[in-house]
Length: 230
Image 1 (tube, rainbow, N blue to C red):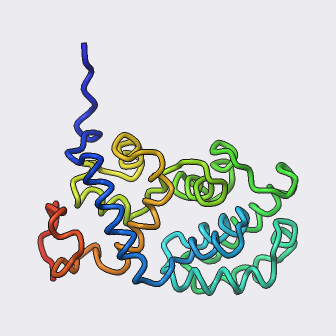
Image 2: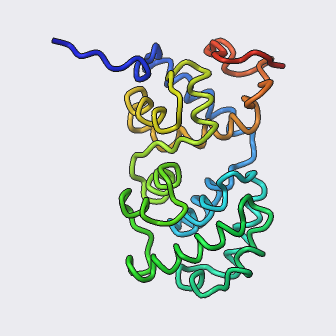
């Protein structure tokens, strides 16, 4: 007896279409500014820097995350240095990131916990990452993927929106999207799909009124849920 996957986990996309999508998104990404988290990963190869930048990035524009992260790293380049800073210094460094006071407290506590519980290193383990303040599945998966090369799908608002808009999945929330994409994408795409769709979402496939005219995915996209576009 064959057990069919739930409707939300099915996809009409075939492997050749997904590879085509991947190549088009990579070509598009090459024309755009590198996202902050990818820049951090490529320039520092540091799971700590990546973790800190990702916490700052939540509900914050990419350009703000970029500048805030650089200011904070000038003050604290290690978990121990971060734990030693006072809250006002952290908050001032990451301002105007969203919820900067809350994030300042979370970041200092993360620094302390990394020193106390993990020998001053970021753990390459999902369960351990999720125990850190301010770290949810999105942040944990991004650190595992970019920081440690462990296949993980980081689903943020862009990945959730665009994968549903394309009809790759039919899901109601990011956690369901992560699970559904695991059955749609081969593991070699799990890490890269976030940066590909984030770049595409920031520069073309906006939440409202996406720029569909001249879109490199026009013939692939059924525009599910799109009521107005340019």
